[in-house]
Length: 459
Image (cartoon, rainbow, N blue to C red):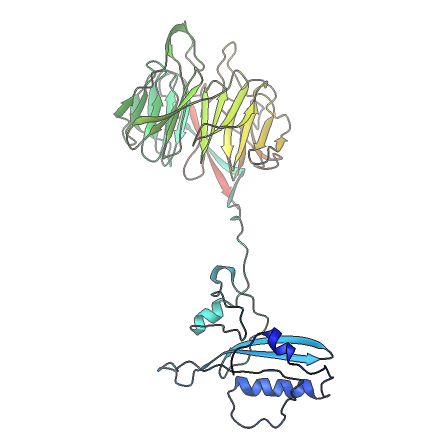
């Protein structure tokens, strides 16, 4: 019988008439017989008004390994009952019961089918049939595995010259002093396993391949070996050198020559360094060359990077800006704040720590929504010296905020709501904070010559 459309078939129907009382039972028996490929005559034939067409397409050749396996590719049944036309499309393997209530798995959607009549649904093997009949499962964000609330706090004594201050961490942890002594620590014991010397007051960043130092005296970016701290490369930035100047942070003493190099941060595939004249530079670590320069609206004293977003912070000016690392577009800008004690990027949001009150403000960069924590208290500062801590770190385990509140000076906040969920006790002190590759946080206690390891508690 040639293929015909539903409209053509409907046009040949006689006037609607009610089906016989036993119509449904006879229809079910007829369909069951078709699915079993029975050849016996139907003892209950359907009348023409009740069935327009019931057609079984030619069977595909049997698999040599399964000679009884044949397929009914499709059947189109149009029922007329009380003037209502109902279309049934069936596709089922010979010798099996029809499947019911199946929902295709979203990850293995069946091949598209044509919408002509009769419809042919091609199946290939039983495994595919089972897969496509599973209920789709929505993708969810992985559950939180650890929290800073109840974290383990370990303190290790260090003595890298005068006043340890900067810290950087990846697989290994490095700490440097304002005087320029740089040390690598064993991340398990806190033992010093390597030493190097860098220019004083120089911030640095650590990634999986190198230690990157922003030379506060000469203005270059110095690449150091990740194991022993020896110099591997030196990249000239061209920043201005100012005579008789001050820098924050710096050792106590008279003014002297300092470069206008600002903060530094690494994302692994790029290293970012600031020029205090209002520029950030991108260094390609594969070539140790500067490949881009972007003007920024704030002085880049402190940098943080996540993905394609760079956070630029002027700590003493109370200003910050988030920029797109692909083209330098300003995504978000903050000004008019009190001094900023710490800053972070996490999960597409910025976190700024107010120096005066200890309040933390979170801004979602995609929506602009802001949340503000309670006032947690000011961080510790040295009397009469404009040396700011950078005591703020954020991960999925929470927000860690360093204050001078005793005895519990570390506050743990929920990373989204900023509600306080716990406190931790360390020496109330000043210093930098960094997150290592294993999720632990390393915190410098500058005046006490200590470095503190904070290991999140497993959930």
